[in-house]
Image (cartoon, rainbow over all chains, first blue to last red; front, side, top):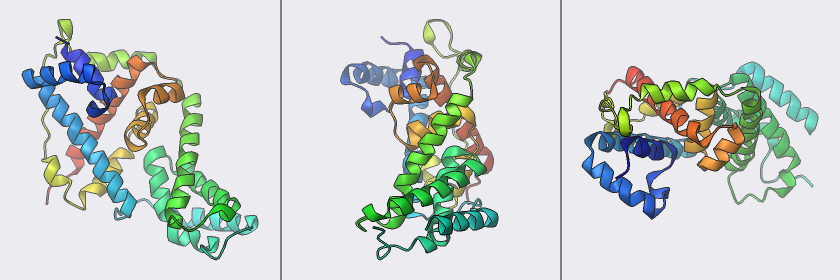
Length: 85
Length: 188
């Protein structure tokens, strides 16, 4: 049986489905039997799903964060582009 | 030969500047570095315009160039910031594993329902803001692992981290991101 610490380490470091089968099977059994590791595993999965959803939103450009290029930076970049052309 | 019939670089800043800046800022967490990366991307784009064939929208083509610039910045920054060896031990202690690696307590539950939150458009602004607050090695490791999908070996090599430290750094990044989301997200 592998220890909780090893499960936490593996879950933090890798994506579960990317692990080779000989590491996934003992982990799967452990997660099913140990409530604490099961909760931790679920939280890691929730976070990874969040990042995946974020990347999908980023792709479509439908996130409107408060930070934008400053006017000064825009002017500086436009000037640099003109010079380059 | 520059292919300006497919895209006009004069409109790049107004059409794609903010999008590319947001892309760079959430990964670099430094306004000056993100602005520089965007400028370098546009300049590299002008040089490579002859190779742009129009099959991909210009925004994604420029984003591909920016991705490399971002990684270059992270690489450069990781050489300048020394990794604090004591950090790994502190995080390990904070996990409170008892003898034989058994945790002493349950992980704290989510203070909101993530499945419901992921369906709300406003949530992603909070998520963006919280990811932008992850600092230094923690932010760099999280970016390369979660946003760019790099392997453990690649990250350890680029960030000069020991494999034994990477998992604690990633664990700490997730914990901080979770706390920030819980503090800033209010379900409608």
